[in-house]
Image (cartoon, rainbow, N blue to C red):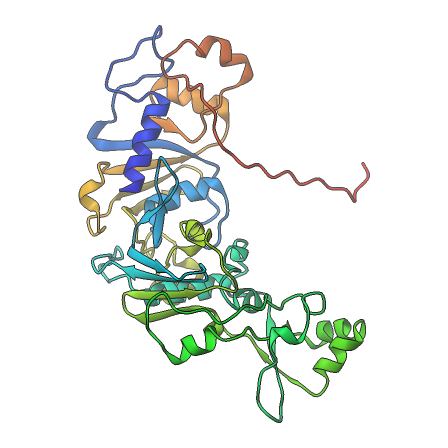
Length: 387
């Protein structure tokens, strides 16, 4: 539903209306797509179709078609709206979220999407071995940072009790989460795991003996605290995410974070199919293997040429998906994109910018977009190499 709305907005922005175009009114040919097929320039060649690996905008545009999260962004207000999670509850201080999944959500292979899929996916995404660049998005989840950064709990070998984060300041132990009071669940569902995860935060130090020893040598208080202790690596099963049943997911945070819900639509939090990933390993996203959860499924992928996705009949909201097919073209050259649009070879592009020299001639035309856009650009400057 969200993707079809976004596509509609994209078509309006690029001038793909129903009126036949001419050179005096429109820059491009504006006949509507045949057979409800959208030809879309999505940006540079996607790094991967694995939503937890890629961080680029070009991949994110494709993920909107192929994968769905617990929640999505409203296409106009950008506020969280239901997706695979039909409803959710938040406790009083915003430190615990309980998502209630819809029972009719399906993978493209017909299997149900459950809360266990999201537990697996988040643990996988935070795995140090996967080295996902967006893993820090989930650091608000309790013990997620400790697991991702190969931390270890500190335990007294005599009493078998774990030291709490309150035993050391953050200046002493960088990986220690902020201490917080025990918070009540938004919904009563007490389990052994919930009693553990909602308790006072444990102290976390590096699991690497050399790194831990170096830090201790520079801090006598830390050295005294760690002397004679044993170190238990933070495991994936320690992360604050739990399936209380097949369709209920509970996420516990390190601290109150009312904004966390708005982060859940990010591609890092979208579920991946465990059976397929474990069966095919790094090749699970190949056309012959890939299984997805969104309004579209992969039909074909020719790298540096086109990615074709078709409507997924098993999608829970398939009745609201108007497009039958999307052809994603990997391209990020503004001039080339505009020429393709002018010739009628594509219906929409990811960028509404035009080369500076073209602005005056395009500004009077109906398919010229003259409105502000929000974007974030990162510029990294090498300050070490002298040219």
